[in-house]
Length: 249
Ligand code: G3H
Image 1 (cartoon, protein in one colour):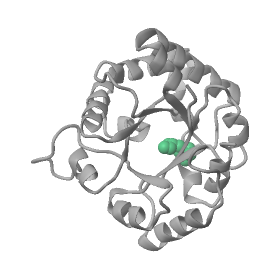
Image 2 (cartoon, rainbow, N blue to C red; image 1 turned 60 degrees about the vertical axis):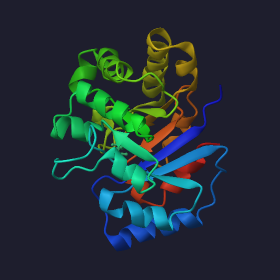
Image 3 (tube, protein in one colour; image 1 turned 180 degrees about the horizontal axis):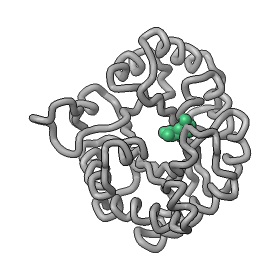
Image 4 (cartoon, rainbow, N blue to C red; image 1 turned 90 degrees about the vertical axis):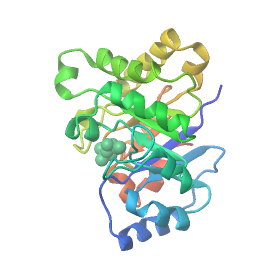
């Protein structure tokens, strides 16, 4: 089954109203491959979601950067999956390494969040990835397999999941994984899905790469057999995000 190339832009905790409008204008004016070829999803901070959704071209979609683990209620400061659905936000990023590291989100908690978001009808970009220390100790696959298993244990349908492999050492550092490093992990993850979830899920689930992707390095990464797109941080705030979208072809 063909996997449509996916490019996500994670704006993280950045932007003012004016800056957000400027980014959207750039995206709206860009000539990019058609939606049949590439799926583009941008993820502004919560406070700008409706603004961006309202201004953004209709062939691009919007994602939240997080949501609460279960039904909303007395959880001060949280935003529930139901609220995102109510606002017409189709996607959510879950398990980003910054949340895992800074807010102590465990594998199990991330698995629960993915399951709850899917149950409410959201599509999920689920993030996994090893630290530099884990890579250097040779435990990359064990780490990403455990992170993926925690999700697999909680869900049965992978149709609305995109798996984002984001080595922590590559995020925001300028030290992008080499195409061979990315391909190796993506290929192993697909094997893991094949052996532990099913052949159909392994064949159809998009595994995208994140970590210092930019306009200059995206083409070679995109050429790897198991790299089905990108989750872009810093470069998604700049015009070069358009070049990254174009690497789909
Ligand atoms: O979600 C995106 C990743 O954290 C990558 O960020 O492109 O700034 O390295 P970066």
